[in-house]
Amino acid sequence: MTSHDQLLDRYAELIIRSGLNIRAGQQVLVTAPLEAVDLVRRVTHHAYAAGASLVTTLYSDEQTALMRYRLGHEAAFDAAPAWLFNGMAEAFRDGSTARLAIIGEDPSLLSNENPEHVSRANRARSRAYKPVIEQITAFATNWCVVSAATPSHARSVFPNLPPEQALAALWAAIFKCTRADQPDPVAAWKHHNATLHARVKMLNEKRYAALKYKGPGTDFTLGLVDNHVWAGGASTARNGILCNPNIPSEEVFTMPHRERVDGIVRSTKPLSYQGSLIDGISVRFEKGRIVEGTAEKGGDVFRKMIETDDGAARLGEVALVPHSSPISASGIIFSETLYDENAASHIAVGQAYAQNMEGTATLSAEQKLAAGMNTSLIHVDWMIGSGELDVDGIAKDGKAEALMRKGEWVG
Image (tube, rainbow, N blue to C red; front, side, top):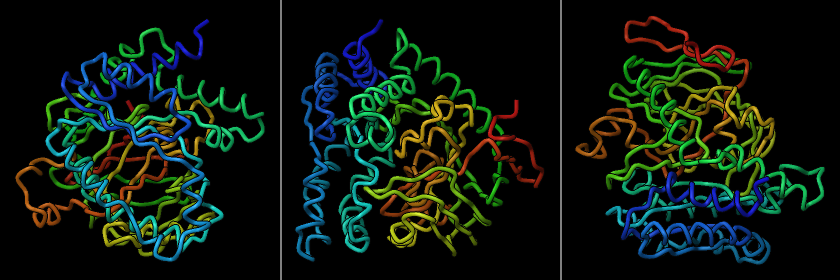
């Protein structure tokens, strides 16, 4: 039987070899919660073994994060470390430093804090983080987001289990969903990427003008930018390195037109956003913009989120995920976007990814906007897929073709 330590080491090797695909001489910048130190150390080992010149880790801590809201003066909620984020953006700009984000925070950490303070702090961070998000969405460097099991997150996912059992159960779920429990995870991801790339190829050949969604509480049409590009699985960053930005990943995704979305949409899974849990989202789009929006839980945080700037109430990404994905099949609600978005088709408000539109490297900001590419300080995915969702591809001549039925691919 494979031990936890062996699985953790396989996972770390997978992150470096398939997630980041580190090149000799590259630096690596890691962000992680304190509780993920064992994974960070193994990742660091494999990074140096792969030829990394320097691995730098920035740790976060939930308890010190709470101190800001319990003890901070009013000015504390409008502050953000722009100096740090400017440095990160500079590191990513030329592709010489890879970006690894290890997440695993308590999804409800800030749910009992003053929502106005949470909103102000999120807005300040989003503004300061803009130089980083611009480099990430432009795919300037190889980057990857993964998860670690932490006590607080495990408690939220398995509230009825004793702490140690909950932590073990979450690690087991992570290893299974990321294929780290297979004898050769790197080979398993090579095979999985081939499947995703075949789906991407089909969609790029179809060149649909729009997608039409029908499901419980959902009836809307989402127009795509004219020169959209579907992507999924491993992709090549601007520095020429092929990487998997998300592990796990079951999605294929592209760019909606920021002004061509109309109808109603209801979420199907909770959304964890900056330490707050948002659930039961229901919105109505008109000409690309959310004109009505509510949430059964975390409504104040949701409204503040989509008011961050003009682009925060418009879409920057649309992704298709089969209902039978391994994450969905697990039956677990992770309350963590990295996992839940790969259990269901989803949309994202905010910043679009430049890789999803042809020719962005030669376009000005004004030209990108005119072409339909959304810009924003935020990029937040939320899940709308289920076993009851139907999706049609709408051709340029208006003809509809079945893409998904009851959440599964047709053909």
